[in-house]
Image 1 (spheres, rainbow, N blue to C red):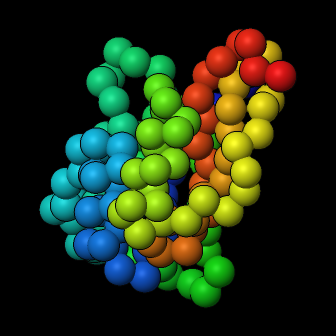
Image 2: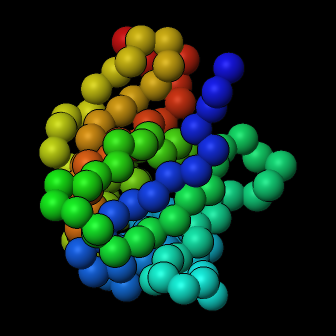
Length: 122
């Protein structure tokens, strides 16, 4: 079955987005040496489940990304999002048997979500 293997976060100000994702999630982000402005994003160790991606200048109006980011603590991540210029846009909600989830906007207006795995969530 096909799986998501990469993501691209569109940004009005890529440097601001890089700073946001480094501070909130501790991602390793480096400028790509290719012919366009593109920052490669490593979200974890290669042997861990998950995907890596990129941050790029917004090429067209309304371009967004809707990916979910797994976090060890929902409350800690939500606090960091708000502290670093993002905004939580939905309440913390239980996905029964899966975990706690909510949507947020990053500094570029992209909508993503965070989830803390918790099989006891109800």
